[in-house]
Length: 112
Length: 118
Image 1 (cartoon, helix red, strand yellow):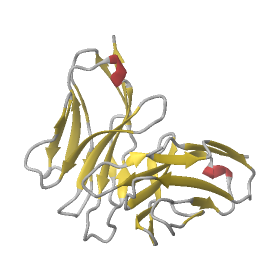
Image 2 (image 1 turned 90 degrees about the vertical axis):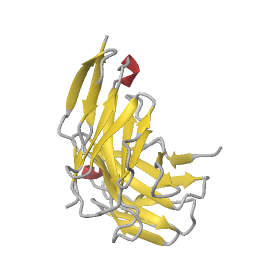
Image 3 (image 1 turned 30 degrees about the horizontal axis):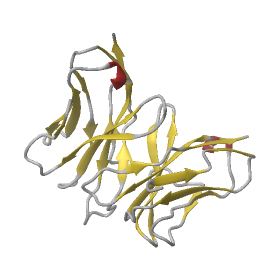
Image 4 (image 1 turned 135 degrees about the vertical axis):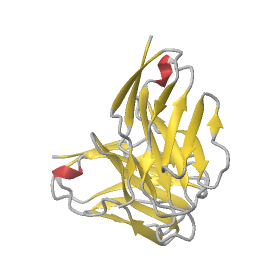
């Protein structure tokens, strides 16, 4: 189906483990974003990408790694998960800087 | 830091009345985009309205309008004739344009929770 999808929708992992959250969009949008949403903080930008092989840090990049070898995929990796990374993660994509970003359904990650 | 500030953590409005949600931003850019999103309790992010910094007229989309005051760096969302389904969290966001050092950086405010009373 066309759109932007995140997987998994829910994930529980242990402290210290590596975990990858997947994001896939079918529109060939140039821009993609990863956010985390926590109570009292709204959505905070982790990483973003203007095109394949072009990524840049957002507001809270520490502890996260991204890659974008293909336009349609933008995985987010937590190299060594910590409890403070328990959050809801949103991926988004946009075709241009004058139009809205479309969001995935979110991934609820719990680090125990 | 280039911040987005939403000073109203929560607001109430009577059904069928209008409500204004505040948003101010800090930027040195001359050209940028401003967005409002709605997040109902189900969690999805729904785009509402967009305003370009060089747009001469305030953006409108149905019952949503944006009161854009560039000199004051404010972009308040006005919802007219509130409906019960408008109860949600609302986020203001700003986008850095082409040519800036962080092209494509889209950042959000902390959000305002709106409750519509019947």
